[in-house]
Image (cartoon, rainbow, N blue to C red; front, side, top):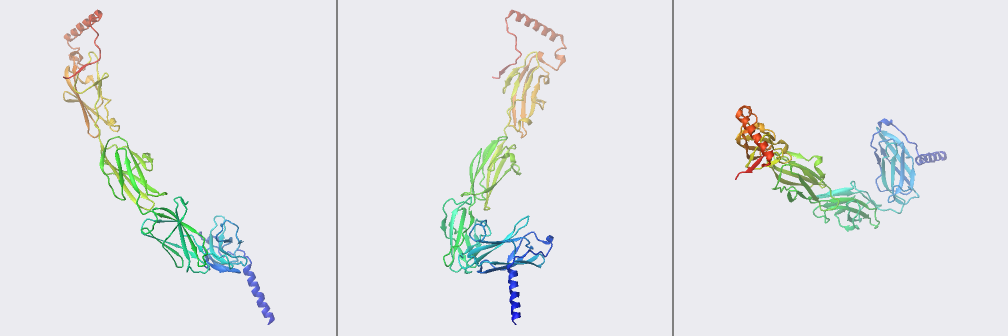
Length: 507
């Protein structure tokens, strides 16, 4: 009997020794069967108590061949030296396809803390980890608040529910007290000292916050809310914080242009009006001022334009001066609209439209004869003895139309030339007084007319040989005039006739 008892005692000692010794990692499946996402589960729950021998176990989807464990005080920096550490788990055994069971047995009899144990699977690519919160020993036990799943929450309307895991040494949240502080923190840093605030919350198996956009007393803004839990012994937990973006109103958009007064818009209300008039080819600038009423706001601006034909198009990259300022050069006459859509980070949408009318500017016909500008109803005498040229190339129009102008030249009501800005003397082959008319037309059909008279002396006809070199009377007359001119020049009694035209206005 004694031998049997001794054998049993030895067997128990061996089993306990095996549990306390570090085991080399065991791999029950080839590495090719491992999943990419690390998953490790604890059979124990957060808040597990242990005073002497900590015994944890669970499952994983990897063989944990390089698993390390660390025990830290919950409220110390994770990078600070751990209270206990180890490079292996106590055991790892295959328990199914891509499933391994593990155990960890650690002597914690010297620890009194609110701690967190972390298991890290270390490999050359990444180091995934899992953790559990523990109460070790008999003292220094504090409540624990876990960080919410999200770091930032948005409340634009309606209700917002936030659940926060809370752990106490007793395992219950009865008689616990929640306190909140808040500060405006558009850049994650408080602009002022945090102030206490009352928020609608309940404690069951967790901390549940219920926020309503209508009843919440905070103004629109980006707020940092800090939470602390005190248990029935008035021991305070760690503090956790999250960001609440409160945005219940649409942004205010003011759209101004270089031809139109400011227009204020309300959410989804189009208050456009057509009261601005510009000419084709005249550059227009549009600038938007957007405000959501609090610091840290963000909006997305989308610009577009609607042509007189109803076609909607966006602005090219070259049109943007800044994201809130664009330039526009309309080249088609009619009613245009520039539309600005502003969407803020809360999803509010504001549409603002600036409408204006683009008017086609008629061309201004300008004709020059040997450097002299011809006015409406002028009477000119063509220069004697030389050919002449009427030049309308200095006719003015808007920049987008001037290159496409059409020139129509009429002589005594008959269309002589339908293109070209230059009209030469060879186009008229009869003497006497002629009425000339220039009609300049742009691509929109707008025109400008210039009417004047041109007197051509009898010897000035070009293009008709029978009227000049074909009769002796004309040759004799030219000879006599030439002799007379020569004698007058020698006597100094008269000044030589200039080659410039003589012209006068009709009375």
